[in-house]
Amino acid sequence: MFRRVFLDNSSTTPIDESVLEEMMPYLREDFGNASSIHHYGQVARSAVDRARHRLAALINSRPNEVVFTSGGTESNNLAIRGLAIENRRHGRHIVTTAIEHPAVKMVCEDLESQGFEVNYLAVDAQGIVSADAVKDAIRPDTILVSVMAANNEIGTLQPIDEIGRIVRELRAGGQKIWFHTDAVQAVGKVPVDVNQIGCDLLSLSAHKIHGPKGVGALFVRRGTRLHTQNIGGRQERGLRAGTEPVALVVGLGAAAESAAGSLSISSSRLGGLRDRLESVVGEMIPDIEFNGDRERRLPNISNISFNGVEGEGLLINLDMRGIAVSTGSACSSGTLEPSPVIRALGKGDAIARSAIRFSLGRQNSSDDIERLLAALPEAVEVLRRLGDADPK
Ligand SMILES: *Cc1c(COP(=O)(O)O)cnc(C)c1O
Image (cartoon, protein in one colour):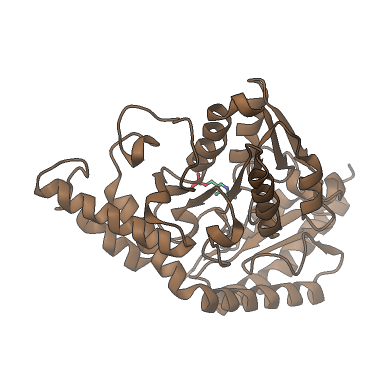
Protein backbone atom coordinates (compact mmCIF):
# COMPACT_ATOMS: atom_id res chain seq x y z
CA MET A 1 0.00 0.00 0.00
CA PHE A 2 1.15 3.52 -0.84
CA ARG A 3 1.76 5.33 2.44
CA ARG A 4 2.35 9.06 2.33
CA VAL A 5 4.96 10.73 4.48
CA PHE A 6 4.31 14.20 5.85
CA LEU A 7 7.51 16.19 6.42
CA ASP A 8 5.90 19.64 6.35
CA ASN A 9 5.04 20.02 10.03
CA SER A 10 6.01 23.68 10.15
CA SER A 11 3.06 24.45 7.91
CA THR A 12 0.68 22.42 10.04
CA THR A 13 0.58 19.20 12.05
CA PRO A 14 -1.85 16.30 12.24
CA ILE A 15 -4.12 16.56 15.27
CA ASP A 16 -3.31 14.26 18.17
CA GLU A 17 -5.91 11.53 18.62
CA SER A 18 -6.22 12.31 22.33
CA VAL A 19 -6.68 16.03 21.59
CA LEU A 20 -9.47 15.26 19.15
CA GLU A 21 -11.14 13.01 21.68
CA GLU A 22 -11.15 15.70 24.32
CA MET A 23 -12.75 18.09 21.83
CA MET A 24 -15.59 15.86 20.66
CA PRO A 25 -18.03 16.31 23.58
CA TYR A 26 -17.90 20.08 23.05
CA LEU A 27 -18.97 19.64 19.45
CA ARG A 28 -21.84 17.39 20.50
CA GLU A 29 -23.70 17.43 23.81
CA ASP A 30 -21.70 20.13 25.61
CA PHE A 31 -22.43 22.78 23.00
CA GLY A 32 -23.18 25.67 25.35
CA ASN A 33 -22.12 29.28 25.01
CA ALA A 34 -19.50 30.03 27.65
CA SER A 35 -21.19 33.38 28.36
CA SER A 36 -24.55 31.83 29.29
CA ILE A 37 -25.58 31.63 32.95
CA HIS A 38 -27.41 28.29 32.80
CA HIS A 39 -25.97 24.80 33.11
CA TYR A 40 -24.92 24.57 29.45
CA GLY A 41 -23.03 27.83 29.77
CA GLN A 42 -21.32 26.73 32.97
CA VAL A 43 -20.07 23.52 31.38
CA ALA A 44 -18.62 25.48 28.47
CA ARG A 45 -17.14 28.13 30.78
CA SER A 46 -15.37 25.60 32.94
CA ALA A 47 -13.92 23.89 29.84
CA VAL A 48 -12.56 27.23 28.59
CA ASP A 49 -11.13 28.00 32.04
CA ARG A 50 -9.42 24.63 32.24
CA ALA A 51 -7.87 25.15 28.80
CA ARG A 52 -6.63 28.55 29.93
CA HIS A 53 -4.91 26.98 32.94
CA ARG A 54 -3.33 24.25 30.84
CA LEU A 55 -1.99 26.72 28.31
CA ALA A 56 -0.73 29.06 31.03
CA ALA A 57 1.19 26.15 32.55
CA LEU A 58 2.95 25.51 29.24
CA ILE A 59 4.29 29.08 28.97
CA ASN A 60 4.52 29.86 32.71
CA SER A 61 2.02 32.73 32.60
CA ARG A 62 -0.99 33.49 34.76
CA PRO A 63 -4.20 32.08 33.32
CA ASN A 64 -5.71 35.57 33.07
CA GLU A 65 -2.83 36.66 30.84
CA VAL A 66 -4.00 34.27 28.09
CA VAL A 67 -6.26 35.63 25.32
CA PHE A 68 -7.69 33.03 22.96
CA THR A 69 -7.67 33.99 19.28
CA SER A 70 -8.26 32.27 15.95
CA GLY A 71 -4.55 31.45 15.55
CA GLY A 72 -1.04 32.79 15.21
CA THR A 73 -1.96 35.30 12.55
CA GLU A 74 -4.67 36.92 14.63
CA SER A 75 -2.44 36.88 17.72
CA ASN A 76 0.24 38.76 15.80
CA ASN A 77 -2.33 41.26 14.50
CA LEU A 78 -3.74 41.86 17.97
CA ALA A 79 -0.30 42.16 19.54
CA ILE A 80 1.34 44.48 17.06
CA ARG A 81 -1.52 46.59 15.79
CA GLY A 82 -3.24 46.56 19.18
CA LEU A 83 -0.11 47.74 20.99
CA ALA A 84 0.89 50.29 18.36
CA ILE A 85 -2.53 51.93 18.07
CA GLU A 86 -3.03 52.01 21.84
CA ASN A 87 0.34 53.63 22.44
CA ARG A 88 0.83 55.86 19.42
CA ARG A 89 0.91 58.94 21.62
CA HIS A 90 4.17 57.64 23.14
CA GLY A 91 5.91 57.14 19.80
CA ARG A 92 5.51 55.66 16.35
CA HIS A 93 8.65 53.61 15.88
CA ILE A 94 8.80 49.81 15.73
CA VAL A 95 11.84 47.51 15.57
CA THR A 96 11.52 44.07 14.00
CA THR A 97 13.60 41.75 11.79
CA ALA A 98 13.82 40.98 8.07
CA ILE A 99 12.86 37.31 8.60
CA GLU A 100 9.54 37.56 10.41
CA HIS A 101 6.53 35.53 9.35
CA PRO A 102 4.22 37.42 6.94
CA ALA A 103 1.71 37.77 9.80
CA VAL A 104 4.21 40.09 11.52
CA LYS A 105 5.83 41.61 8.47
CA MET A 106 2.60 42.60 6.72
CA VAL A 107 1.07 44.05 9.87
CA CYS A 108 4.20 46.20 10.26
CA GLU A 109 3.98 47.27 6.61
CA ASP A 110 0.35 48.20 7.11
CA LEU A 111 1.28 50.30 10.14
CA GLU A 112 3.88 52.09 8.00
CA SER A 113 1.06 53.22 5.75
CA GLN A 114 -0.61 54.63 8.86
CA GLY A 115 2.27 56.84 9.92
CA PHE A 116 4.45 54.41 11.86
CA GLU A 117 8.11 53.90 11.09
CA VAL A 118 9.52 50.37 11.12
CA ASN A 119 13.12 49.07 11.11
CA TYR A 120 13.45 45.57 9.62
CA LEU A 121 16.80 44.49 11.06
CA ALA A 122 19.12 42.34 8.97
CA VAL A 123 20.19 38.92 10.22
CA ASP A 124 23.67 37.40 9.90
CA ALA A 125 24.56 34.67 7.39
CA GLN A 126 23.31 32.09 9.92
CA GLY A 127 19.89 33.73 10.18
CA ILE A 128 20.26 35.27 13.62
CA VAL A 129 19.66 38.89 14.60
CA SER A 130 22.03 40.31 17.18
CA ALA A 131 20.63 41.69 20.40
CA ASP A 132 23.10 44.57 20.08
CA ALA A 133 21.61 45.49 16.71
CA VAL A 134 18.18 45.58 18.35
CA LYS A 135 19.53 47.76 21.14
CA ASP A 136 21.17 50.14 18.66
CA ALA A 137 17.99 50.43 16.60
CA ILE A 138 15.83 51.44 19.56
CA ARG A 139 15.12 55.19 19.73
CA PRO A 140 13.35 57.31 22.34
CA ASP A 141 10.16 57.04 20.26
CA THR A 142 10.34 53.23 19.84
CA ILE A 143 7.23 51.70 21.39
CA LEU A 144 7.51 48.11 20.19
CA VAL A 145 10.13 45.47 19.49
CA SER A 146 8.85 42.35 17.72
CA VAL A 147 11.32 39.51 17.20
CA MET A 148 10.26 35.93 16.55
CA ALA A 149 11.41 33.18 18.92
CA ALA A 150 12.18 30.66 16.17
CA ASN A 151 12.08 31.09 12.42
CA ASN A 152 9.53 29.03 10.50
CA GLU A 153 11.71 28.35 7.45
CA ILE A 154 15.18 27.67 8.84
CA GLY A 155 14.36 27.10 12.52
CA THR A 156 16.95 29.52 13.92
CA LEU A 157 16.44 30.60 17.52
CA GLN A 158 16.68 34.33 18.11
CA PRO A 159 18.27 35.85 21.25
CA ILE A 160 14.89 36.74 22.73
CA ASP A 161 15.97 36.47 26.39
CA GLU A 162 18.59 39.13 25.79
CA ILE A 163 16.20 41.29 23.81
CA GLY A 164 13.64 40.93 26.59
CA ARG A 165 16.22 42.16 29.08
CA ILE A 166 17.09 45.16 26.93
CA VAL A 167 13.45 46.20 26.59
CA ARG A 168 12.76 45.68 30.31
CA GLU A 169 15.74 47.84 31.28
CA LEU A 170 14.56 50.63 29.03
CA ARG A 171 11.10 50.43 30.50
CA ALA A 172 12.50 50.49 34.00
CA GLY A 173 14.24 53.69 32.90
CA GLY A 174 10.89 55.22 31.98
CA GLN A 175 10.55 54.53 28.25
CA LYS A 176 7.15 53.39 27.00
CA ILE A 177 8.34 50.31 25.13
CA TRP A 178 7.09 46.73 24.91
CA PHE A 179 8.38 43.41 23.55
CA HIS A 180 6.39 40.98 21.42
CA THR A 181 7.62 37.60 20.22
CA ASP A 182 6.02 35.30 17.65
CA ALA A 183 6.64 31.94 19.31
CA VAL A 184 4.36 29.91 17.03
CA GLN A 185 7.21 27.62 15.91
CA ALA A 186 9.10 27.54 19.20
CA VAL A 187 6.24 26.44 21.46
CA GLY A 188 6.26 22.72 22.03
CA LYS A 189 9.79 22.25 20.65
CA VAL A 190 11.93 24.30 23.01
CA PRO A 191 11.04 25.57 26.49
CA VAL A 192 9.05 28.80 26.23
CA ASP A 193 8.70 30.69 29.51
CA VAL A 194 7.27 34.19 29.30
CA ASN A 195 9.07 35.25 32.46
CA GLN A 196 12.44 33.99 31.37
CA ILE A 197 11.96 35.73 28.01
CA GLY A 198 10.61 38.81 29.71
CA CYS A 199 8.21 39.49 26.86
CA ASP A 200 4.99 41.48 27.21
CA LEU A 201 3.22 39.73 24.33
CA LEU A 202 3.70 36.23 22.90
CA SER A 203 1.85 34.57 20.01
CA LEU A 204 1.18 30.86 19.61
CA SER A 205 -1.03 28.59 17.54
CA ALA A 206 -2.68 25.22 18.18
CA HIS A 207 -2.31 23.62 14.75
CA LYS A 208 1.49 23.84 14.89
CA ILE A 209 1.52 21.69 18.04
CA HIS A 210 -0.83 18.87 17.00
CA GLY A 211 -3.96 20.78 17.95
CA PRO A 212 -6.86 21.95 15.76
CA LYS A 213 -6.69 24.71 13.15
CA GLY A 214 -8.49 27.96 13.83
CA VAL A 215 -7.39 28.60 17.40
CA GLY A 216 -4.38 30.18 19.04
CA ALA A 217 -3.55 32.50 21.87
CA LEU A 218 -1.84 35.72 22.74
CA PHE A 219 -0.08 36.05 26.07
CA VAL A 220 -0.69 39.60 27.30
CA ARG A 221 1.35 40.47 30.37
CA ARG A 222 -0.68 42.03 33.15
CA GLY A 223 -0.83 45.79 32.70
CA THR A 224 -0.12 45.74 28.94
CA ARG A 225 -2.80 47.78 27.18
CA LEU A 226 -3.95 46.88 23.68
CA HIS A 227 -6.41 48.56 21.36
CA THR A 228 -9.01 45.87 20.69
CA GLN A 229 -9.02 44.68 17.09
CA ASN A 230 -12.27 42.75 17.31
CA ILE A 231 -15.12 44.54 19.06
CA GLY A 232 -18.69 43.52 19.78
CA GLY A 233 -18.61 41.58 23.03
CA ARG A 234 -16.88 41.29 26.38
CA GLN A 235 -15.24 37.89 25.86
CA GLU A 236 -11.54 37.51 26.64
CA ARG A 237 -11.59 40.54 28.95
CA GLY A 238 -12.85 42.65 26.06
CA LEU A 239 -9.66 42.03 24.08
CA ARG A 240 -11.21 39.65 21.59
CA ALA A 241 -14.95 39.80 21.16
CA GLY A 242 -16.91 36.84 19.86
CA THR A 243 -18.36 33.62 21.25
CA GLU A 244 -15.48 31.37 22.31
CA PRO A 245 -15.04 28.34 20.02
CA VAL A 246 -15.17 26.03 23.02
CA ALA A 247 -14.15 22.80 21.30
CA LEU A 248 -11.18 24.48 19.61
CA VAL A 249 -10.08 26.12 22.84
CA VAL A 250 -10.33 22.75 24.60
CA GLY A 251 -8.18 21.33 21.79
CA LEU A 252 -5.55 24.02 22.32
CA GLY A 253 -5.48 23.32 26.05
CA ALA A 254 -5.10 19.59 25.48
CA ALA A 255 -2.39 20.10 22.85
CA ALA A 256 -0.53 22.45 25.19
CA GLU A 257 -0.56 19.96 28.03
CA SER A 258 0.54 17.18 25.74
CA ALA A 259 3.38 19.34 24.34
CA ALA A 260 4.52 20.27 27.84
CA GLY A 261 4.51 16.64 28.95
CA SER A 262 6.59 15.31 26.07
CA LEU A 263 8.74 18.32 25.20
CA SER A 264 12.23 17.12 26.04
CA ILE A 265 11.75 13.51 24.95
CA SER A 266 10.02 14.48 21.74
CA SER A 267 12.56 17.19 20.92
CA SER A 268 15.56 14.95 21.36
CA ARG A 269 13.92 12.24 19.28
CA LEU A 270 13.12 14.67 16.47
CA GLY A 271 16.61 16.14 16.70
CA GLY A 272 18.01 12.64 16.21
CA LEU A 273 15.86 12.07 13.12
CA ARG A 274 16.83 15.47 11.75
CA ASP A 275 20.54 14.74 12.28
CA ARG A 276 20.21 11.38 10.52
CA LEU A 277 18.48 13.10 7.61
CA GLU A 278 21.21 15.73 7.33
CA SER A 279 24.15 13.39 7.63
CA VAL A 280 22.88 11.01 4.96
CA VAL A 281 21.88 13.85 2.62
CA GLY A 282 25.31 15.38 3.14
CA GLU A 283 27.00 12.10 2.24
CA MET A 284 24.82 11.11 -0.69
CA ILE A 285 24.05 14.33 -2.49
CA PRO A 286 26.84 16.60 -3.75
CA ASP A 287 26.62 20.36 -4.12
CA ILE A 288 24.15 21.20 -1.38
CA GLU A 289 24.04 23.94 1.21
CA PHE A 290 22.51 23.87 4.69
CA ASN A 291 20.64 27.07 5.46
CA GLY A 292 20.62 28.63 8.92
CA ASP A 293 22.67 28.10 12.06
CA ARG A 294 23.25 24.40 12.75
CA GLU A 295 23.40 24.86 16.53
CA ARG A 296 21.00 27.57 17.59
CA ARG A 297 17.88 26.16 16.01
CA LEU A 298 14.76 24.09 16.56
CA PRO A 299 15.24 20.31 16.58
CA ASN A 300 12.64 19.62 13.90
CA ILE A 301 13.55 21.78 10.89
CA SER A 302 16.18 21.21 8.25
CA ASN A 303 16.50 23.65 5.35
CA ILE A 304 18.73 22.60 2.49
CA SER A 305 19.49 24.15 -0.90
CA PHE A 306 20.14 21.73 -3.74
CA ASN A 307 22.20 23.69 -6.22
CA GLY A 308 20.96 23.60 -9.79
CA VAL A 309 17.48 22.46 -8.76
CA GLU A 310 14.29 24.49 -8.57
CA GLY A 311 12.83 23.93 -5.09
CA GLU A 312 9.34 23.94 -6.51
CA GLY A 313 10.24 21.18 -8.98
CA LEU A 314 11.81 19.07 -6.27
CA LEU A 315 8.75 19.54 -4.06
CA ILE A 316 6.49 18.29 -6.85
CA ASN A 317 8.79 15.38 -7.67
CA LEU A 318 8.89 14.28 -4.03
CA ASP A 319 5.12 14.67 -3.79
CA MET A 320 4.73 12.19 -6.65
CA ARG A 321 6.86 9.83 -4.59
CA GLY A 322 4.49 10.31 -1.65
CA ILE A 323 6.61 12.71 0.38
CA ALA A 324 5.35 16.15 1.40
CA VAL A 325 7.92 18.90 1.98
CA SER A 326 7.93 22.65 1.46
CA THR A 327 9.81 25.47 -0.19
CA GLY A 328 9.97 28.32 2.28
CA SER A 329 6.74 29.06 4.05
CA ALA A 330 3.40 27.81 2.78
CA CYS A 331 2.27 31.43 2.79
CA SER A 332 4.77 32.53 0.15
CA SER A 333 4.97 29.32 -1.85
CA GLY A 334 3.08 29.27 -5.11
CA THR A 335 4.27 32.80 -5.76
CA LEU A 336 7.54 31.70 -7.45
CA GLU A 337 9.20 34.45 -5.42
CA PRO A 338 12.36 33.11 -3.83
CA SER A 339 12.12 32.93 -0.06
CA PRO A 340 12.85 36.31 1.57
CA VAL A 341 14.25 34.43 4.57
CA ILE A 342 16.94 32.58 2.59
CA ARG A 343 17.71 35.77 0.70
CA ALA A 344 18.14 37.56 4.03
CA LEU A 345 21.04 35.18 4.71
CA GLY A 346 22.80 36.93 1.81
CA LYS A 347 22.88 33.81 -0.35
CA GLY A 348 21.37 35.09 -3.57
CA ASP A 349 18.37 34.11 -5.63
CA ALA A 350 19.65 30.79 -7.00
CA ILE A 351 20.30 29.34 -3.55
CA ALA A 352 17.00 30.75 -2.26
CA ARG A 353 15.09 29.21 -5.13
CA SER A 354 16.65 25.79 -4.61
CA ALA A 355 15.82 25.59 -0.90
CA ILE A 356 13.67 22.86 0.58
CA ARG A 357 12.37 22.76 4.13
CA PHE A 358 11.99 19.40 5.82
CA SER A 359 10.04 19.79 9.05
CA LEU A 360 9.32 16.93 11.42
CA GLY A 361 6.46 16.33 13.80
CA ARG A 362 5.66 13.96 16.62
CA GLN A 363 3.97 11.49 14.25
CA ASN A 364 7.14 10.99 12.18
CA SER A 365 9.14 7.81 12.64
CA SER A 366 12.62 6.80 11.52
CA ASP A 367 10.81 4.89 8.78
CA ASP A 368 9.61 8.20 7.37
CA ILE A 369 13.17 9.50 7.24
CA GLU A 370 14.38 6.35 5.52
CA ARG A 371 11.57 6.75 2.96
CA LEU A 372 12.79 10.27 2.24
CA LEU A 373 16.42 9.19 2.07
CA ALA A 374 15.51 6.45 -0.39
CA ALA A 375 13.75 8.91 -2.70
CA LEU A 376 15.64 12.19 -2.41
CA PRO A 377 18.99 11.44 -4.11
CA GLU A 378 17.26 10.14 -7.21
CA ALA A 379 14.79 13.02 -7.30
CA VAL A 380 17.62 15.56 -7.12
CA GLU A 381 19.63 13.74 -9.76
CA VAL A 382 16.70 13.56 -12.18
CA LEU A 383 16.03 17.27 -11.83
CA ARG A 384 19.70 18.18 -12.18
CA ARG A 385 19.94 16.14 -15.38
CA LEU A 386 16.81 17.81 -16.73
CA GLY A 387 18.24 21.20 -15.80
CA ASP A 388 21.48 20.46 -17.68
CA ALA A 389 19.54 19.42 -20.76
CA ASP A 390 17.46 22.56 -20.67
CA PRO A 391 19.54 25.46 -21.98
CA LYS A 392 18.29 28.60 -20.23
C1 LIG B 1 2.16 29.32 11.14
C2 LIG B 1 2.78 30.57 11.69
C3 LIG B 1 2.00 31.70 11.97
C4 LIG B 1 0.52 31.75 11.66
O1 LIG B 1 -0.23 30.96 12.51
P1 LIG B 1 -1.73 30.52 12.07
O2 LIG B 1 -2.27 29.87 13.28
O3 LIG B 1 -1.57 29.60 10.91
O4 LIG B 1 -2.45 31.78 11.71
C5 LIG B 1 2.62 32.79 12.52
N1 LIG B 1 3.94 32.79 12.78
C6 LIG B 1 4.72 31.74 12.53
C7 LIG B 1 6.17 31.80 12.87
C8 LIG B 1 4.18 30.59 11.97
O5 LIG B 1 4.96 29.54 11.69
